[in-house]
Image (tube, rainbow, N blue to C red; front, side):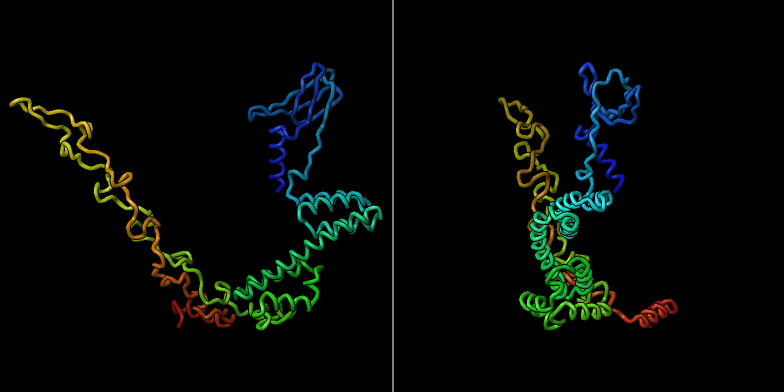
Length: 362
């Protein structure tokens, strides 16, 4: 990440968006990066046409030096800048904590913003009113985010994606400890009953019961299919469709009229390139104008020798034609052999021992 930041600084300087400025006494304005400076001279690195060069300027020729500080908030990722700035703020700098809270709020780092506003209020009552306004807005955003995160947890459980649900639960518990939905069992029960009543009946009506049930089930769930007993068919990508055998997925086939050559025999000269006529008894051969004496003309039935595939109608796939999964898009999980459950460690060890000894399960 540090190298990325340096690259950004270099680009900004090269683009003229950030640069030190040296103005000479004759009015010349130079932009670049000041490398060194002393009482006798200033060394400036300038970029022109993608090439860098160092310019040493005597101090007696310099009128003004304007060093532009780097605005790290514009070149670093928000969270990285937040952490950097937090280390720089003094322990009793109320204004610094408040300003950093505003930055975090604008970048949707609501939890970090709330901590800065609370710190500013504790240090100086002057910031109490404005900090409370921000904290009220943050609470609204946090409650909304909390509900969305909890809904994702319940959706994963309802869809029988237990390992996904477990990971989402761990994130929810770590991220939203301050929200009403995370703390109040009655609020949780109401939310579950409204959104996912099936989860409430099967796993419990509050967060504590759901965590316990999910953790227990996760111990037995197959890690590949997450207990769903089947996985996405690799042949069709889960669509149930099959690649068209006629066009092999290209959506087009060779034209029958020209056999894919994009040309057909000229009907005027019959492919000879010349036409015949008689002047009295004398036979005269003239160059064929339609084919320009080549004997062939462009095929009007196709485009560059290809026509739309008649089997898949130009789609490249045959709807519900996958033989690997019988058009279902799913196949039995090979890890758990369709049971959806993880084998106990003892059984896995025994199966591995038999495979090593006999070359396969016995």
